[in-house]
Length: 188
Image (cartoon, rainbow, N blue to C red; front, side):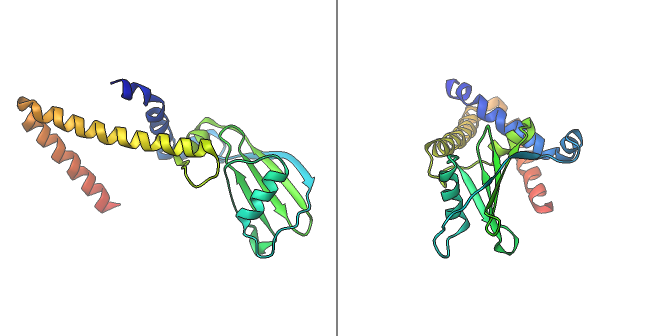
């Protein structure tokens, strides 16, 4: 019971974020058709010497270190490899950076924080790929939630099985749930 109480924030986050993803069109209407909205934070001249054949992730790491914005990120090429874009995945201050090689221009945009987008970002966040402690801590906490859900399922099954007068109803409900799950999997 106490374990379940401690995990309420994670369960609420996953429930609310799944709800926003399931009803995306409704929330898009609220936000005028655009879920993620970025506004210019600053533009700056930036010149860097990258190693030959450097990957976007390596270039992004160097840029983020140079401008004191280290943390979780992902990066890729701009069209025609004329530069890179970087999504700095900060839970409170997410940033989109665009660096173009020819212009030596670094454009930093900040995301307008919206609760639905924030909840989705937490839902999709995964740990153990980044170099930062709190990203790993998030991944570890999600592993704990997964184990808790499995334990809740197993303990619920055991409690149901011990109560003989609920077995018939439990079997009907279990088979109905499994059947609905299979039908949806097949039809999707």
